[in-house]
Length: 103
Image (cartoon, rainbow, N blue to C red; front, side, top):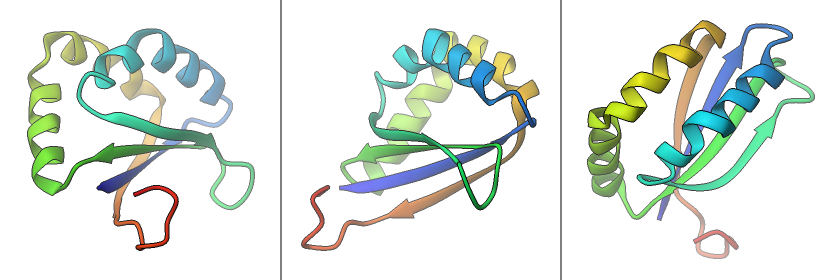
């Protein structure tokens, strides 16, 4: 397994709106292509950030699933709705250590 830690910095004060929209209109779409391991809102450090942790079998699986997601017309219609909330985004790939409870 690999995990993608995808962090979005959101326009200050807009994280609740972003999360409500994402949950209502986007989560069911992306969940067809990736497994959500968690979602967090920052409380310290870089503020106004929402971090998702997505699970994939490996890099090849992630690439194939992201290609399918990008081609999904429902996702293509959703993305323009969240773009006004985004200030910055970052993607980090994580591989669990042998003793990690997430494998």
